[in-house]
Image 1 (cartoon, helix red, strand yellow):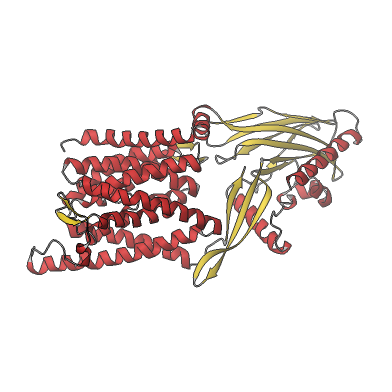
Image 2 (cartoon, rainbow over the protein chains, first blue to last red):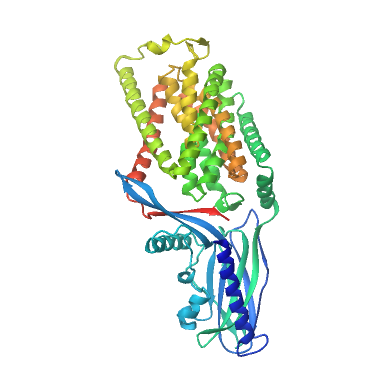
Length: 251
Length: 305
């Protein structure tokens, strides 16, 4: 399964490269970069944004896809059994992006042909989330819909498409925003140059979302020295309980 | 003011967490229940992932219980002997409980089992306590504080291993508290809580302990049960958020101090009646959730990163 996914990913990458190489303009039809390739999550983290900027070699539309690292997720559906609501069915999905956002210089459906959007997986409808346990396909589709709905409700698949502003004909910039509950990991940001509803050039740039400072240290410690971490957590709680009782002595 | 919780991976308001800790700590001080059965659902409600909520509330319970036990102990209201005999049974019970939990998880019905257990247990206990405390209150009204026998004698008092529990003014078989500890241990391992709300009524009605000693003694055994759960959860699931627990603790330990003072001012049957009301309210909420059509039939679990 993961092998198949890896193949698919490679195929998409090749498609991108081919587009970049054989597009109408030869070199550097599209150049883009982020102001920062790291989002650090600290104790005061309430969300963050990075600026994406770039240049094209002429008029065209820009579509940007922000994809978080893939996760395995299970969707369960409740049904009524003997008067109470119980989980009665479940479908596991292998490659759900933990975050998925779009930005475009024009409404996506105007800028790009549906078949092209599907090929480059632009839009939540084109994610092609694979069910790990292939039940009846139509049932799996309903579960996938529910998954997307939930991710949208959690703000992890923002429904609003970000705006890309052009400065003149060739320079563009946009702000990519991440909510406070942004999943950690390596994100891929795909930038597409679109002309006549077709992708003529593309570029991919990584973005790392990671805990830093004290939070990173806590997580690291909790993972490496799990038993000692648990013990310290208990001792800390006992200390706090004892300390709190001190000022109340003799009352 | 928001703070990012590293294990839970969400940002939450510091003051909400402090207030939540204080409210639950107050209740645990008053009644001797850990408050896990309130704290866990509330944490889930404000956006903490369920697994982290269960584990981190266990962590905060340790602190709140220590604080509560110290407050009760200063008044001489802790029966240490009884507490440790209960624990003996409790540890054995939690071993069986952890095994049952793993079994239920394999079948994929943990959530249901926990909800059903909560509803049935809380409903029965709350109902019984409410009837009993209501009756006692009425009797008090009718003919003042009529002295009644400390407890009724029945077949349970014929069991071997008779032991004297001085603080509790009891001379009963040690098998009784061991069995009780075992039963509560099984259930609390499955439900991920200290089990105080089951322990407290059982201590009053099954063992016949004086109500004044019950909260302190119950909290004493919750310290150990919760510490055990915290370490196990940290080790096996890595779901203990120390930052979250610390915030809850700050409110919780203070709340427990104030609560235990407040509790000693109440009459025993008032205490039992209030506990019954609270327990029934939680049971009603759970029953409602089980029987009313959920707004979204689908729920999502992230399995692997």
